Length: 580
Image (cartoon, rainbow, N blue to C red; front, top):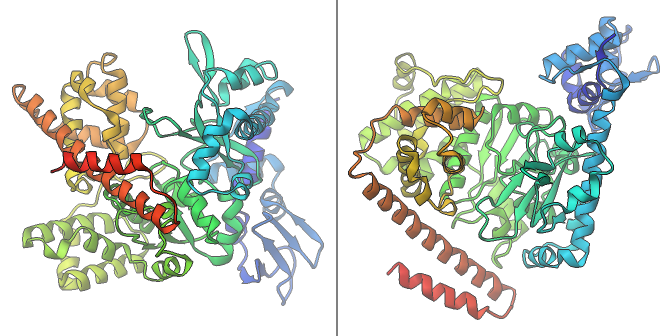
């Protein structure tokens, strides 16, 4: 007889938010860190039924009963254990795996075990002589041992098979293959993570489920490499640091959402412990659904460069479309949260003030994109594009608020905005579980983004040009991912349909390729000229960005009374000559 696999049961018990389940049946009011309501199992006038979200359990003081979400459904709906598990799994889009024997039932346990051993291995590497380079990197980034230990940071050495040789005798091939820790090569399995600082991801119960690795080589195109999708690790539902910070997020009832691990660690170290990181993964509706288990208030704390600004705009709309209250914090001067705190003039008080001053997404977009100083035609176009996004908002109150803000900020009568609602079609929703909206080319409005978009368009129509592209020049994640796919596979496909299959199921990337492929091709005689112009534009921008980065490093060194690196000064002078 087939039965529900233990891995499915474990995922239901770990991922399903008990407060969300029970609040559908019981009117719960917060009292301290727990919630109370009238018992659904007996008649009473004073609330004695308690739900503890941080423990993922409920308890009825009157009857002495208690349990988890599965147990609640069994008691309330009078159904069997398997029916309760299936009901919750289906509702929360958790894959139901069935097994027929004992051999398969412990796969989940083995995957947890191999990740735990890998994490210990990486941590030991960091503490050994092999990890001196990695330890130096963390020291130079001003992370102390307490943070390194608390978040179990490790190091994967520059070896093809060090981890594999450590683990391959302890686990069978099926576990090795499904762990996501190794890649297949002609010679067999090789380590997925090599010469990288390793940041582990944890499940809600504190088990290691995946990793992100930061390259220590400047020549490596992929700076951050995450675990692939596995039975344990689903990137669209996972945030870096959630195991450590979710209790604080529940307590404060809002979250500071950052892009990367080092930004997360810096804020945590400074005492802003209600923080999460998306870790290089494009934010989707699945992220929003996962986040909504803990809070519906988000302050986006992304990098203040152009890429970070565009990411904040996309994420802000997705969050509002999923019913969140959103604000956007602007660090200014192209700083990220990590660098912000390295400057002498910045401290906890100044950052707290930035939190208080965080803008509503509409105000943020209008300010950062300088909408009010644009011509009437461009302002009208912006209004129409905003309406396309707002039409995807389901909450009437949020939708009305957005209309009023647009009216106030643009100086356009509300009735005029509302009259456009019926004339403008809403953006198409992608037919997949994530409900991610169609990729908007309008976000590619900076000089850098336009150049990358033009390069991508050229490659879609002529993939042989991919050899001329240096990936490190690309800072737009979506363009980077697609161009890297083309570069890695340009002799393995013959048309756009096949390219879409190589891209996979990322809706933003697929939609962008589809949109650009529908455009007319650049004249064959001029495409090389256009390509070289775009590359030159990106090279100039890269040089200016590096100049700003070095200047910030010099400021940080001066603020900390450190001696200036002569190589840094020399490099700055060389770069400045290139932009004259």
